[in-house]
Length: 352
Image (tube, rainbow, N blue to C red):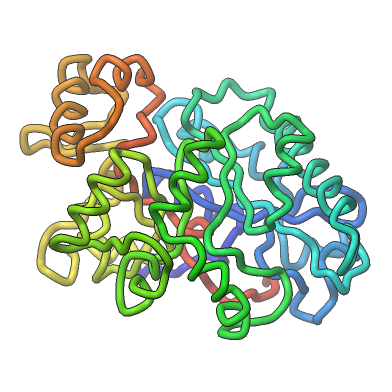
């Protein structure tokens, strides 16, 4: 049968994605009755603001987060196979009248803190290993909300700062000052100083002419620019989005994690002809064989991590890396492939 891509952020997409890749990324919004909903866009297909509608009213275009957590096919890999789950919290559109509107930043902090608290409460019943979950957001108030709420899980800010309002290219234009002012090395230092386990960042920091626009050190995926990146980050993980199939090998070979929209099971090889491994972290190739992380011996893991540590000049010692590893936990430094919105970006269509 031909591959049929599920709707982004749907239960089907996220369940397939977490099993097919090293993990998944998805978006959460809060309904008017305070239910966490799996939804990227700030409006419904009819143009209504998501935060102004109840969970029942949103049922035709968004699934409930709690319904995802009730699916063993999603939760078990998260608990038992070292899979990574990246949860992006979405702020409401300022015109929705929710979360402080256009001017009240304090209310937006409270709103985001409430979302963080609800995510914590929803997943607290599961025994999730350290290093498997990260919460992040574009909103500049997100880290203030994290500080206010005392989030139980690692948190980071998406770079550059994309606003909740505007569409398409206009959003990127508005984000240009943020992009220029924050080179990738500078953003990495910002995240490291705040205890984030990684930095989620746009691919434009690493490829094309755009990487030359930022103030500070220019880095990239090839040659001297890659050497600068490797020497600067010293293993600090970067989760890069969106990575096209043609760029996947470059990103992984730079020691970075790729968020991909290409989840078709029909894709067995990359454009350069090399075989595609969609689980380089949770099922790495060791001595020519693809072995699930949880089935690797301690020596296998030590050899695997030592090789990668040497290749990308990771800061942490092998003893520190092994201490942050177990059957269900893979160190943040190991490059991964993450399913963007589950099995890739799609247009937001109603359920059948």
